[in-house]
Amino acid sequence: MKKKKLILVTNDDGIHAKGLKALAETVKPFGRVVVVAPACPQSGMSHAITVVKPIEIEKVEEEEDFVSYKCYGTPVDCVKIALNQLLGQKPDLLVSGINHGSNSSSSVFYSGTMGAAIEGCINDVPSIGFSLLDLHPDADFSASQYSASRIISKVLANGLPKSICLNVNVPPVSKSEIAGIKIARQTKGLWKEEFDKRTDTLGRDYYWLTGNFHNDEPDARDTDEWALKNNYVSVVPLRVDMTCYNTLDLIKNWEL
Image 1 (tube, helix red, strand yellow):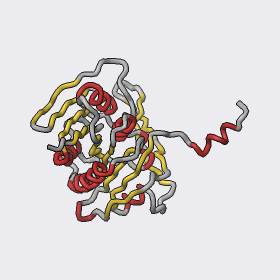
Image 2: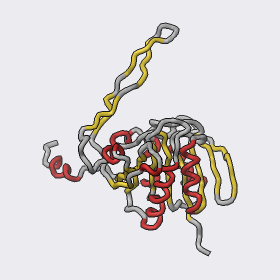
Image 3: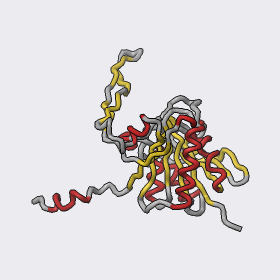
Image 4: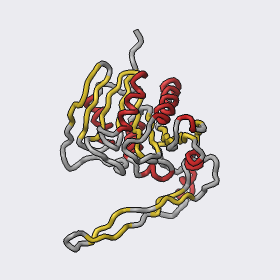
């Protein structure tokens, strides 16, 4: 009998997030599913790991071909402890999400969702991060699940190159309004952050992070931001190796 695929599921919105449940349901038909997710929301944690205290794990649910755990740590902690302690073997696939909110363009650098996917990639596990451009806790994930199922089936059938993972973002529209799935590159843009200065009841100043995203190339049709604006699901391949090889020879000529 053919052995079932082992799929690791995680996120950064926490074990109780609707997007996590939607992703777990999406991957169940593909094989055995193990969920290891943060005990509480960990958005914006990027690739952070816990080094100042022990990490605790609690089993949440178990049934045939499915088990879930909550981890008192970051999304990357979840992946590390799953690979090193819980699974007993390397998974065939890691999926992270479905995040409540966008992780396109430069947002990928701050994302705990993508931090977890990148950690899987570092460990040579085919990895995909999924995000829906809807911050509402009760968002409709049906279009995301449909798109995720199609992408996951292709990755399981074809694999991914070593040190490459996928960043998938889904526009906040119904399944019937999805224009298609577009392979894209990361948009050149950044968050220009502003801090709202406030005063607490004791008269002490504090600052609340706000800000707006500035797209440096709004008309570039090969980017993830253009795809999402035009109701396409964007799929961006990311590489773990951040070396700029085009600059190596230039720097070698410096007199250091």
